[in-house]
Amino acid sequence: MKFNKWTLALAATGVVSLGSLAQAEEAKNQVLTAVSATTLSGYVDTSAIWKFGTGNNLVGRSFDGGTEGFNNKQDGFNLNVVKLSLAKPLDEGQWSAGYQADLLFGPDAQQFEALNFSRANDLAIQQAYVVLRAPVGNGLDIKMGVFNGILGYESFDSYKNPNYSRSFGYFLEPKQHTGVLATYQVAEWLSVSAGVANTTQGPINGRARRGSVAFDAEGNLVPGTVPAAESEKTYMGSFVLTAPESMGFLKGASLYGGIVDGLPGGGTNAFPQGFTDVTSYYAGLVVPTPIEALAVGASYDYRGTKKQGNGDIFTGGAPSTYANAMAAYVTFQATEKMRLANRFEYVNGSDGTWYNSNELTDRNNAMIGETVTLDYALWANVVTRLEFRWDRNVAGAGSLPPVGVAPNASGDKNALSLALNVIYKF
Image 1 (cartoon, one colour):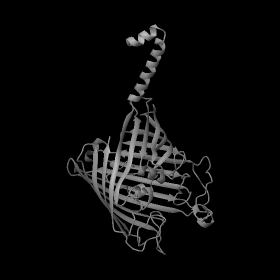
Image 2: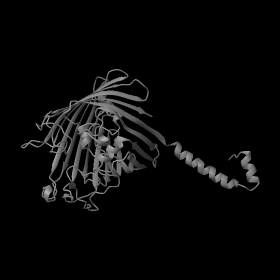
Image 3: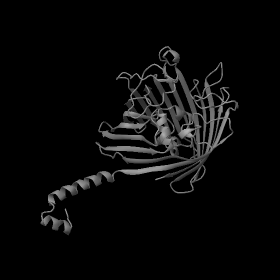
């Protein structure tokens, strides 16, 4: 180990010890070695949204709807979110270890926490987990901590999705779990995952709740706060089938299926259907075509809650509910820089899933959605895209108010919006 002349002079006078310096230098090198494997990445996500007409709000829209507060993005310019990611990925070693930490800043961080029934803050943790590899067969990868939900065609990171706005299916899916998830690559064409978490959906470290629905002193409906039994955890599993090279143009096609079952967690926001057992199913398909630039996909989401108590919220129960969301995706890479994406959706569900119906007979919700997105890469590291979206109420319920608000008098069944999305990735 080499020392400069000033360090040697200090050592000669007894001011410092070469042994302590050697230990300090060794510790410094260990820290630098550990940090050098860490990567820093992220993005800044912005948008401008114009809503056509005055009759409707954009319901079932996870991050680009709303009429007030932090989720109001209509008719103006918006900072969506700033994301910073620190990660040390697994290497090829049999006992490899790493981590992932994703931090969110801004309005979408608030909404992300609200969707997870947590306190809405400008800073949120999307993921923070340690990942370990055990030398079992082909290698067993284990995440422990906070990780993204395992269901869904689309991601929180909008630039990874074909369209800017998230689907109705994304709205239904669990967004985040605190727990453990194990993934095993059975073969080149099959991967399976299984995990246990505290809740189906809830704040970080939140615990499952099971209790009667009650009213506060002002007559507002509030969830019960009786903790669930210690054994009542959330259980999840999924599989991915990937077409091998021998499948020709279908090479890389994938079929994904998954299930999450358990209880939601307590937070500042009640689960829309009360604290009941929640089961979510998902199936997704991505298929290339003989036309290299063209790809198609499809997804199906189901969320159901089991009846709690006698099903009457006025006497301490909650009714069983359901929601279905189906979507078809088409993407076409027109040129090296330009891509077109289309998503068509049909959803239905119990009253209150997306809006409160004013129908006296059939109170179920039903909507269709058509989203067209033009993505044109003008600058390096920048996503620039223009999107038009049309949602229509097809259940005969009048307008499309937000959840918990009575329909307005306009009777307009359509919600139309135009969005510009600009993201810088680093």
